[in-house]
Length: 263
Ligand SMILES: *[C@@H]1O[C@H](CO)[C@@H](O)[C@H](O)[C@H]1NC(C)=O
Image (cartoon, rainbow, N blue to C red):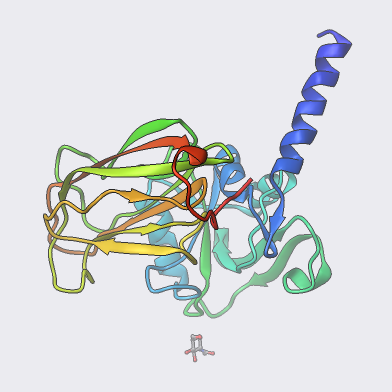
């Protein structure tokens, strides 16, 4: 390859690296990178640190993957996979990958923070799975418009699904999300199966609604250029599923305070 082409690529990569980076102590390209390396982090539906070793294995297996090995986790870490949460990996070992030393995470150390092989497999942690093939549902979506469907749609979705979609369009754009079809197991507070929408890059802040039943929700418009969708189904009763469509549009054509921008 010509040297100038190489330099151009290098410059491009550097620019990309700068475009991502840290925000609130979280390395925000990790979701993108996790796909590249086939390694990803999962927690229980009940929240952080709720999985025994056996349950952790089941989580990875369910999605067609396996527990990540130390080597896979390290390979992912070397291309930037950084997660501040201890999880099970292969053969009952627990740890997490740190790319950049921080005061609040990893004891100021870079590398795999290794808690070693746990003798007590009933301890509860998160999990690191390895699945080089695409996951059954979810992902990072950067297209200007796209259809998002429940797994298996138009067939009924299966029990025990966990899907996260992260929509990220260009800075200065917003996302309009429309519900085309919606049928998710109904219960009064949507505790069994549900779709959650967050006006944010993650499912921690910007909660915009939790939906179940077969009532078609109104469209949702993001305040910034990111949105997160999370679909959970429990161990029993399924339904027809859903189909949504998002499209990106210029924020300037729809003035409103923008709080969720993410570059
Ligand atoms: C193993 O871990 C579980 C969960 O933390 C705890 O309840 C249990 O007492 C531990 N067992 C032993 C033998 O330490």
